[in-house]
Length: 452
Length: 183
Image 1 (spheres, rainbow over the protein chains, first blue to last red):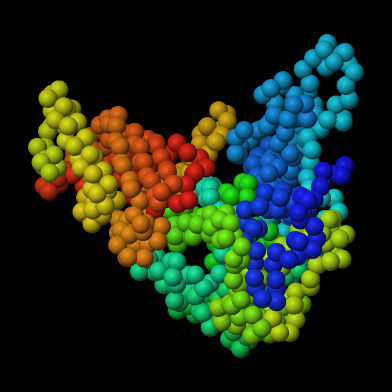
Image 2 (cartoon, each protein chain N blue to C red):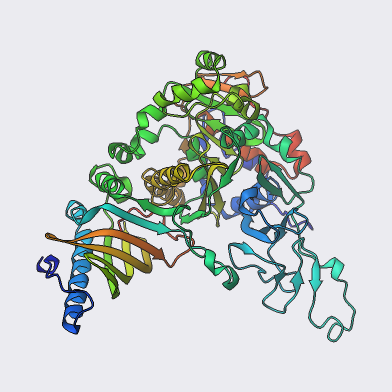
């Protein structure tokens, strides 16, 4: 096919949809190791969907840039002289060299180190050495600007980009559940991202890092040693019998501890000052009443983990965001973005840094123990017999009710379960099977209602 | 541990005093590294002062023109930003019997070189060195972290205590599953 979206021979629609069986929770292990599947993911999930780029506070001034990825396409996220945020593919239109080799900084323009082609902050080609002499003036600069993301949009200051012009708006892509997830980050007020993105790479498939955020079953066991240090009281955070799972269109989800409906109804009656007072005896600071505008009536009950499909995790109560960037089928980069309220005091910042470094990131007491689980699970997908075994995601299947909330989102009030993982993989097969946005729009599942 | 005994030289006085100080600092750093490699974490903690600051900023690949932003500053995000209590929690985690990322335990080797005593202010000594922490795990995992280190040492009657360990790593993207070992 001329568009380069050639389907790997062995993965037609039927084969893709059979990789996960929502009726049994059986997941085919080949999804973590197969190169054909990985190439399809790059085309049909990352190049098609909306990808998190950065927060507006990371690039406040003209020329500020931050390097990110859309699948394996490296992009420069840069604010231009008009204040516009552009997402430009970091590859010179002459010979493909990377224009920008730093991971962040400030630039007046981007000059290629190979032959000196010079691009403006909006991607326009503005300088070509030898234009008159070597090219003899036979050259149309307007045709060779940097390739750009098809759309760049933001929600609550968080910028996303898609390479697919047929993609719906960011607002529609996020839907109630995705917007609720980002709303969690801003629930206490406007935020900024602290300087310093922790980055490390783990030998695991990106999806196993993603689905783990819905997995509240592993917490007490995988993270038992963190619990025993006394730094965190996981039993208090976990609320195993008060779990709230929200499933959103296009694969977004939120899973984890939740505030029971009756308790939220009581909270809705009281003012912010009283909430602040009550927060002294709760594991999480209670959100102000305004959080409902950002998170919705159902979302505001979640104290869990949102995932913006495919790969943006919002951690515990929105204090960090973590991107899981694929680096081939067998490796994943984890990028941690830490937020603090815009008007935070040095003391609040200090606490945010301590909390973030001590819990998550490669040296975090919790996070240290996750990576090896994921890399060993990925590795076990390579054995001939091992990979034929499938993964088991049956927990809670058929035992719960998904109920439409007042704001349209479906929510499951339950105990610890694997509803979030099942929804993620069901949606993932649908993204992978669809040949374009029209196909995906016509052939994706709506969030379930009733028995799940 | 004779090297931890203090002879209290007058700082900056004679060549002999400086040589002795250099020797004492080096021996202390080697002993301390040996405790970590031997997994004697409680003994290592005994060398840590109450006001310890154990910090590893995040390094970024930046252009020459942005080189001032190469490392995050104190108060920004970091990989480690610990006081003594936090280091004790890290040790408790290692002792818990359920620290899966360290069970089977990693094999670590702490190399310390290019040691320079850069400041002496009364009993407070600042030393810089290059470090290499080599770690292997399971059968295939290999990590090698190198960098520059600034250590604060305090002379006490019982020997030196560590007041500061600031680690300036050479990697920007950490090419490791985790950093579950102490630097």
